[in-house]
Every structure is written in structure tokens, then in C-alpha cells.
Amino acid sequence: MSKQQLISVGKISGVFGIKGWVKVFSFTDPRENILTYSPWLLKKDDETKTLGVVDGQLQGKTIVAQLTDVDDRNQAESLMGWDIFITQDQLPKTAKDEYYWSDLIGLNVETIDGIQLGQVDSLLETGANDVIIVQGERERVIPFLQGKTVISIDLVVGKIVVDWDPEF
Image (cartoon, rainbow, N blue to C red; front, top):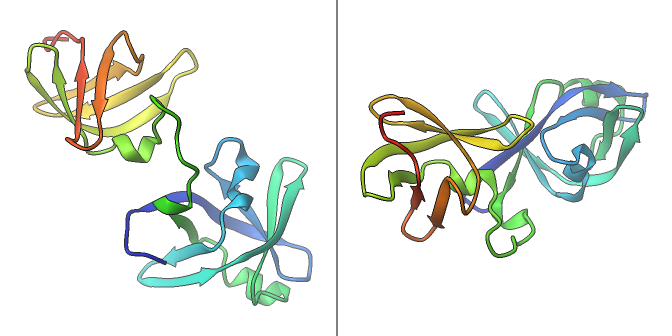
């Protein structure tokens, strides 16, 4: 896999059956989208391995997957707890004004008046709308509403301009 930014997409959470299938806790939306990415870079502590996805499906509320060279339950059990990553180039291209959360993490955030608020630390789904968590001299939670609170996003420059009161 290339050395570009790795994106966490899930975790191997258990085993399924006796033929080496694993249960997967997926961070993708919808959950089963994790199966469309192959290969997976698996990481646990300082160890890494790359395995292809041979097959997979929704099994009730769980995602199960068959990985290359994992042919029995013992091999599958040895993967429990491993984190699943993909590279950014494995993601589909976004449409105009669409962004992956991973693209926004680390961007500088400033108000329309040029006041620096900090950097995007993370994003959260709140139900009504997503919010960006900005870390600066203090933490700010800003609604991610493009065209309202989020005025512009420039990935090349690494900046988000927001219509936000810096005192809030």
C-alpha cells in the first residue's frame, strides 16, 4: 500500500464459522461499504499486514468477511482486535462541495473576519447536522452547515472559513 494517509474504516471484532471468516465492526456509512475496499491494511500494536477481501456480506446486524489466506477459525481468531485501514486513493472521488471527514481533519479554521480559531480536531454526527470540533486556545463546536456557518473550504490551502462568533 502507498505511504499516503491511512483512513480507519473498522475493526475485526470476532470470528464467524469455521472457514476463517471474520466479524467486522465497520465505521463506514452504510456499514457494508467496508467490503468494497480491498486490500485492507490491518494494524495491531506495531504489527501490520495487508489482506485482500475475498467475499463478505451482511449477516443480520453484523458484517462478515473472508480474507485472503485466512482459511480456518484459528487464523481468524488471531486477527481479532486488529484495526482496519485503507488508503485515501481507495475512496471514490467526491462531488463538488463534498468532503470526506478525513480531508477536513487538521485544516485551519478562521472566521470571515480572519480571526484564527484553531484546527479541525474531529467531526461528530449529532442527528440534526454534523459539527466540527475545533481545537485552538479553547475547544469550539461549530455546526457543519455549508453556505451558512461554513462559508468556504480550501483543501489546497488547508483552510475553512466560518461565519462564527469567536467569543462563542
